[in-house]
Length: 103
Image 1 (cartoon, rainbow, N blue to C red):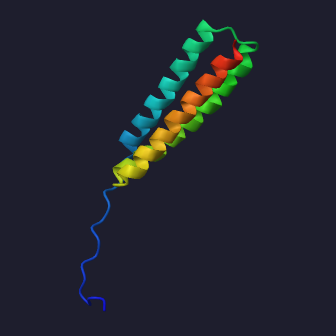
Image 2 (image 1 turned 180 degrees about the vertical axis):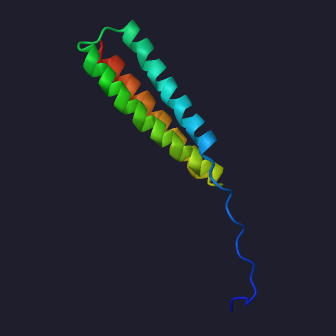
């Protein structure tokens, strides 16, 4: 039988856009820098298309990192860790594919 005067769960901490945007911009900058180094080290067939792809991919990673920041700031730390690990795995997989195609 439920208690009539049970305490409600504590409220989740609020999401702050400032740190979330910084996290997203940091990840976006790292991905762009990583692929700029790859572009300088390994010749690509069409640099324009490569840059456009890097821009789209960086936007995807930046938005994903904003989501990770939201999860972490609102108390969902395990989910944030898992999604962050997934994003890192996606970045490493794409880097591996780019380097594999460059051979």
